Length: 102
Image (cartoon, rainbow, N blue to C red):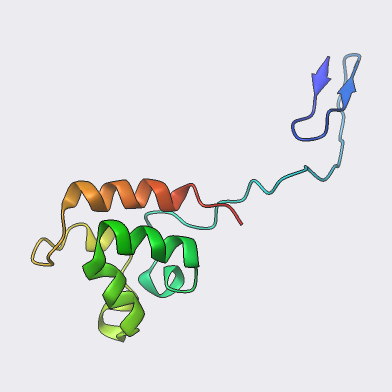
């Protein structure tokens, strides 16, 4: 018995190979991760809201679109301890941003 997520379809299958194409009822893609740059995040309202709440210094860098900073990833920025931010809040932001769906 196979239940396809997001469709409600239940299939009884015999042994063998099967291919079933379907469109789920929600989008499962998560476009952001700790490898996302400030440049990419700046274009997403949800991501910027998370940054502004938790690490305003990084949100400001993203909004300024300064090429010196915009092409660093969140992971790279997490190792730059000379920037004024709370490492725990940056970690929380990375986790929340990674859960954003399209």
